[in-house]
Image (tube, rainbow, N blue to C red; front, top):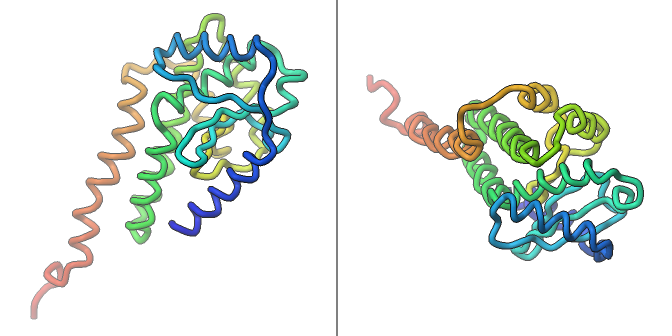
Length: 219
């Protein structure tokens, strides 16, 4: 776990070295408007970089920064940018980067338990679906356009733990697109938290009992 976290921090640091300030005032206004709709008390810093190919939320030195690909600012449509910003601000408002560290720390402790790996994958999928749902609540947001954005970005590398990218995990793409056209009756925060916290924590007693000498039959 420590090695993977160190590697992720290094990756985020390389992006941070080459990012620059977004000078387009319209993008900042769009970010502030979406943050207001999501009822966020603070707005994360906004940067651009040629080192990223997908909009992403990066954690460096305990601070979150929303990074946009430079190409998106040059040729991306306003509607696509709005959806991407809403998705990343959803991650920011839900504190997903902090929860990711907790989940993957638990996975490192219980690495021998196959259900933990399954729960981690389900958690990652639920997290992305929840943020997709929040992004599509924005006015004039079309699921078809959003699905098109994901399809264009699906070949990008998976994001490390210290990064929450719009692409998410490529293996969850089908489930995410399917969920866009369905209505969920559960709050998005409840879906991801129940899979992450309850699901993984409930596995701890079973894992401990499996390691206990008293779990074996006495002669």
